[in-house]
Amino acid sequence: MEKRNTKQKSLVRKIVRDLNTHACAEEIYNRVIKVNPRISLATVYRILHEMVDTNELREVANGSGATVFDPTVHPHYHIQCIKCNQLFDIDLPYHENLDKEIREKTSFSILSHDLTFKGVCARCTPKN
Image (cartoon, rainbow, N blue to C red; front, side, top):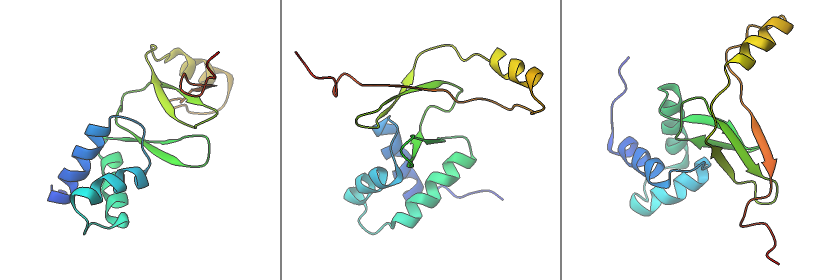
């Protein structure tokens, strides 16, 4: 079934594109309602999940129990600040050989892998 491209979907897509970061649904919603105060949080969630289903976004757990939406959909790695929980993309090659290696060592049928490094970002690092 073909999904319609509504004004609400267009608005959510624009906000996600403009944010260009790993944002949770509530952050996206807070931006959306500034433009369209009549849209509900449930509608924003539905649109975001449709975008995940159509591979326009990736849904990523940020390590603190929250889910964020990542506009970078190709396989890639992340680094997360342990102080502010912000998630960042890392510009490193994706190592598909890890999938093969795990497949050979286990009985799993590996589809892909996610790797998140932990550290403290520049904003949260005390300045001396």
